Length: 398
Figure 1 (cartoon, rainbow, N blue to C red):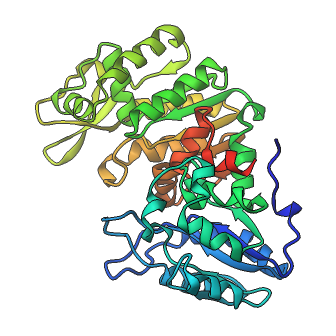
Figure 2: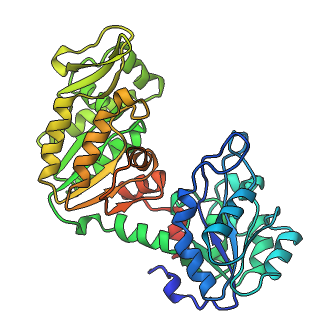
Figure 3: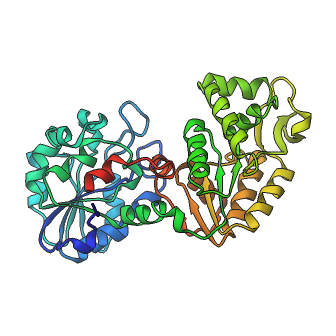
C-alpha cells in the first residue's frame, strides 16, 4: 500500500501534528550545541506553514535519566529563527494546555509541544492499535486534523507518537521521511558496481548489512572496517590481540565471529579485509601489517593502516555506488582518523554515494567532507532499511 506524502495533503487551516526528530547535542546548560537535525526538517515545516497549516510539532530530546533529557524550549527558539513563520513553545504535550495551544494557532503558525518522552509510555513500544490508546495519542489526536511523520531517524521504533496517530488521523510522510524511503528503499536501482563500506562498533547490525547486501546481490564488494573488521580478521584466523579480542567478547559479539566466518566462506571473493592496521604505541600512531599481528599487550587495533586505505580507495575508484555504514576507526582521535577520512573521501568520488547516518554522518561533518548524494538522518533506521527490515513507523503510515 503506497504511503501518502505532503503532495496528498490539503493543509490550509488544518491542525497538523508533525513528528520530527530534533534530538540534538546539548551544552552543559541545556542549550542546543548543534542544529543539524532541526535544519533537516525545515523544508517540511516551511511547506506546511506556507500552505497555512496550523502546525503542532512533536519531538523528543534525550532519554529518561540521561544527561541530555531536556525541555524543548531552546529547540522551539531555534526553529523560530530558522522558519519564516512564528514558532512558539508549550511546556505540555497532550494536556488541556497543549490542546489549547494548538487550538489557539492562527493559519501559518506553529507550536513546539513538550518533549514526548516526559510521558512515560512514550519510552515504551506498542503495536499501533495499542499505541493509539495511550494518553498522549488519545488526548491529543482530537485536537488535530492530520498527522505527518517526518522522523525517519526514529522510524525503527514503535512508540506512541510514531505509530499511534495514524490509527486516528489521516497520515502522511514528510519530506525527510519520503526522501529517505525513496533512496534507501531503492538501492538496487543505483549505478553498479556497488561497494558497501561496513564498519563502526555496532557489529551485529553491520554484519547483517553485509550479509543482506551479499545474499541479495546488492553489493559487488564489501569493505570491512572498524570493530567489524576486527571480527572478520578474527574469523579469518588473525589474532587481533588481547585488548581488541576482549572488546569483542565484553560486548557479547563472539557469535559474530562465526557469522563472519560463514560469510567469508561463501563470499570470499567479494569481501575485502584490512592488510594493515594502526595501534597506539608510546602515545603515537603505529602501523602493523596483519601478518605482524597480534600487537603487544595493551595495544588495541584502532584504525585501518595506510596500505588498506589505498587498497580500499582503489576498489571505490571503480564503483558506481558507494554505501557507507560506520567509521573505519576511532575517528574522534586525530591520530586514528586517517582510515575514516581516506575511505570516506574515496567514497565521495563515486558516481553515486549514500551515507547511512549516525556516526558515519558525524564523521563526515567532522572532516568537512562533501560530494555525497544522500546523507541519511537516521543511523538505526538506516541500518534497518539496509538490512531489509520493515520500520514500524513507516508501516503505520501505510
